[in-house]
Amino acid sequence: MENSFVRDLAGRLARNVPQGLQTAGADLERNFESVLQGAFNRLELVTREEFDVQRKLLQRSREKLDALQAELDKLQTADAAGKESATD
Image: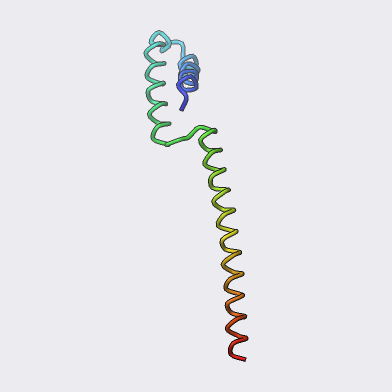
């Protein structure tokens, strides 16, 4: 995750802590940031850019697979027709 996002979220959490606990605000914010960063790392999240790149790669792979499947089907049909005419 981007550090600025985690820092911003940790700051928001720290600002929403009850008044009596806000004296430890900087410590709370650092602790929130650490906990959030650890949680996001465990989730193995990726950026939108990384996701889009992988999606495009998968789409191209799918298109190639579909083309190969169509070619295989065509070859199998031609082979079956050839075997059929040879037995006639």
